[in-house]
Length: 157
Image 1 (cartoon, one colour):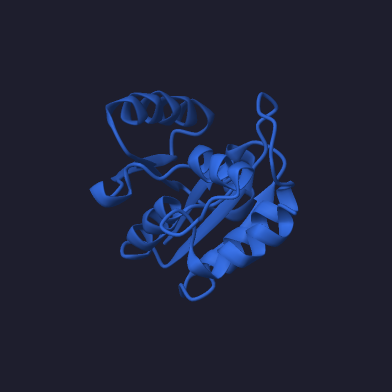
Image 2 (spheres, helix red, strand yellow; image 1 turned 90 degrees about the vertical axis):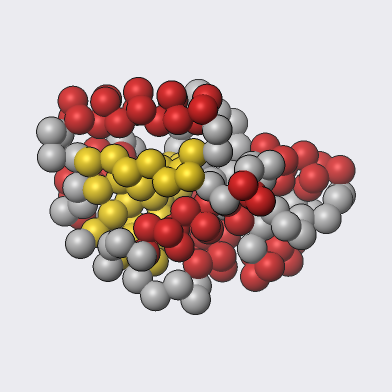
């Protein structure tokens, strides 16, 4: 069975990594797809975000990094994916993800969304925090995957 984990991933964090690891316990293949949102501006390009994902999930068998400049529903239909895995850190995330899941059902009634809770130890981790640390020149330890930190620091110079 295939699933998808999507996001802006600007950049991909340890929280995202944990969601992918949890998804791989249930699904044979998990597509980890960086998407563009026209309402956001990004620190990293779509291709750079995909490369950060690749560095982070490289050792996870069954995880595939990709990037897509279109609708999640179109990507899912094109790749025969019906399951979406989304991470939640708190009740605010949960409410947002439930509304997103309802919209995905409108695109295709076969789409099923599974909400996965982020480990409490990573609840403070966010792409926003990573970008803040990058701007300040602070350490990314505990925020990004160790295999991605050097790469992200080089991109940020």
